[in-house]
Length: 417
Image (cartoon, rainbow, N blue to C red; front, side, top):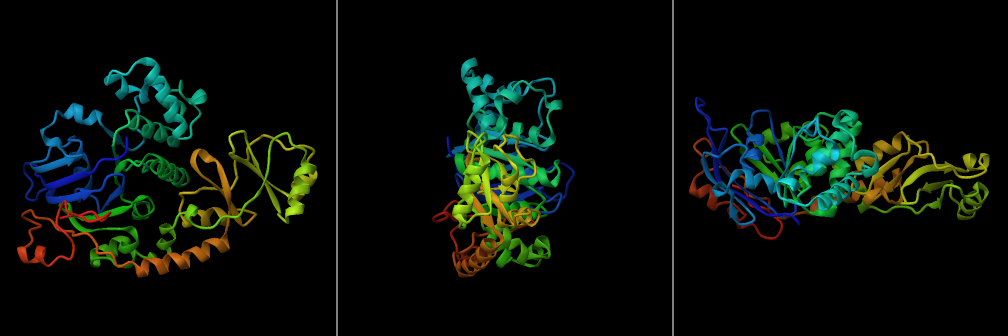
């Protein structure tokens, strides 16, 4: 099942004893199959907005429509079984195995045992965890990154059209965080779910989001736009300050590795005579050979000097291999290349299959092209207005907007009010 469209229609959330609503008259369209990042300072209402979509928090006013159905009129438990939800650290049940954690919702939905087992293995493969190795482990036997991968697999278990993520990668180290971001991009590229994700990290929002919604206090929607236009044309001083310094460097996150040219490589396989591989790379004028396993995943990157010392190609993976996913950003690729002795990186696609080699010159050329493309983009930005008491707008202000009102966006441009 692919993604479903979501509409928050004049949604307000008030808490007793608070002078201002946590969310004040928010109307926002979230396009089907897209990733929308909710960002803003602490206490601005972004998590409240996220949790109202699956009614972990009940809205005080307004409608929330998912795939044409007003979910505020639906049984809350039934609604949540059809929406994936991921939190920090995965939120796994410690007394259950990985397989049992992933299969919770399918069991609630009445799936049979064989179907659940097949789905568990399928999802572990999807998040790059070997089912044979991980399905019977308990959460305490996993690293933080592995727990988060299982959390994503569990959220996808019943094939929901919508995936809600609340600071999903906030509790892991920076290196693991980058890998999990790449994994999510690969998963979304394959499944095309509707993803709504809360983050404090603007760089993460730029990397993951098709659209970014920047909130101020009271869930005031200050700007709702593409990452490119937010970086190139912030709506006001608040957005400029939120983006922070180094907006130019953030342009590195706007282009994916798979969108630029990659060089081919000479491939080798474990057990092959090293002299045969060396002869192939000399004949091709290459300096290295990429060793791939039976599933075409890179496990070693051998120079001429190393090959000259070997009899046969080994099968032990190199833990320091400079690898980036095809959906990783140029910023991630550049970081990887700077620590690589080859001054380049290996690019992998779906299921970590090797696709090619990228070098620094290719990255620098692509940056220039990306900046030129962003400067030429003249598509109207979505309206960003709130209609609550503290975010009230006049009829004249709405009429003067260049883009359609809520729920009437044209093409891929979401409408937000």
